[in-house]
Amino acid sequence: MPAYTGSIKLVSPTLLGMIAYVDNQAVLIFCDIVTGQQSVPLALGKVIPVIVYPR
Image (spheres, one colour):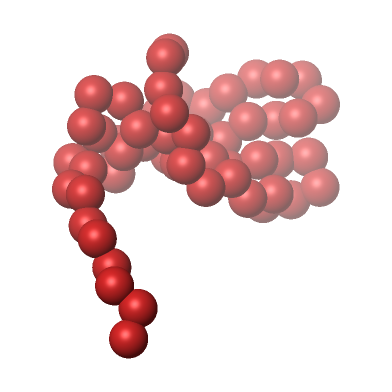
């Protein structure tokens, strides 16, 4: 699945969780780093660009 990867977090010693962006949709994917097996992508919703200005 071609995607732009957002944040990546080590959820457990062998499991990565990552947010990917595909066709203006955000999905959550888990990947076992030992076997390389990925979970079925879980749709998080539509991506809306937001600009945040520091105070």
